[in-house]
Image 1: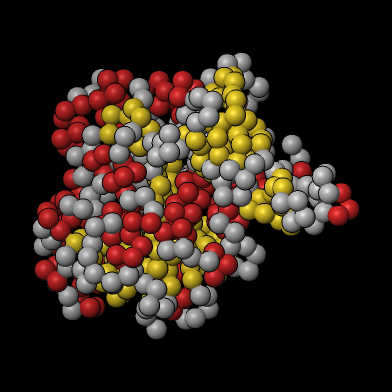
Image 2 (image 1 turned 30 degrees about the horizontal axis):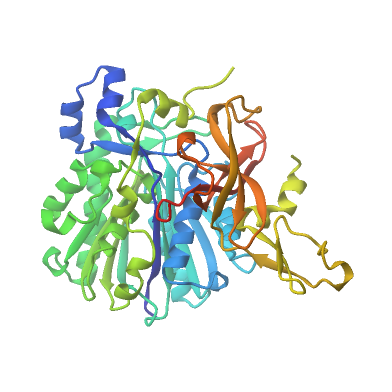
Length: 349
Length: 133
């Protein structure tokens, strides 16, 4: 049974902080940082936004884009590394808010930045086997970066929801296949109760990101017998602009193929939403028949690769909900003091 | 707020679900079990409101209650839904943007929380509907 994306929705908070405003506080050179990271600003959640509110907004956008009867959704899985509760699912909040309850299963996923795509694969299995009619996979985060840490320049907020189904007549993109590459690699972690993650610095690069993204991407292309030139677009997990650009080149994809999905320079790293945001931005402009290659990466570590073929249905639903580039427009900029307040870095006595 | 008290009205807060009297065609939010106009002749049904509305009036909170200090200054408004009911809600934006009569639309936000260890309360707030102002 074929499976595919029936609808998608994205959400990005309206606030931004520029790299230069963070660099000023820590005495870093903003030009060198921006050039090195290929990130110029990042999104910041409002004071009353968290992973649950972002996940709900993305889920509602996906439901309304294709006018989905939410009661058909038999599974809601939310991937995040910043779930608001340590114990109490984000996914039940989402399911209640989109009125999909009570006849469904729900659970939260965690696999650093690829928890959302792991949720997609779980939904593929459920709809592919016929266990549920539609499954909703969400990647959403209000990611954390310790004050003064390199992550603070990129850790952003946002979320994306995909509704996965098994009826080809409803699909806007068929998921042709998926392949995962996973090892136990401690490149990035956050211990229970700790407010900020730790990472292995440069160790996050070659043994982490590049090994697992290339492992998953090459594995999928080998499995399917495809090559980079078979695809119109490609999306790779974007912790910054440099990594996805470099891995695309390593794999044989061109700058033009990754351009529509490379949203990190003006958004930052939305962690569990990162690769999914790139896929959403690409779907926003893909034409029927286009093929999209995507690989998410999660520290810890693993890569999830996907091959999509866009269908004629995309033209019917694309404009029915805000596009990623529209969500990036007209941001409200804040200085570091307001950013610190929004991120809970200021504690009242 | 107790866990049970919030949970009972959760669906009303998440999705602006109120009631509608089929006898006199009046909408209510928060929901009413009995239509105050029709009394025993009333015929009440659950009703999910579309969401958008207008700011009837508003105030700017500078001295916030405990738990809301970080959000001050913020706008608290009486919203009139397009179907008629009025209720109080925060309008999430720069307080200088708020005006009487402005169009607003619902968003899903944190309404509050019981300290660091307690429950987080989610529900509907409003933001300016910039496409219609």
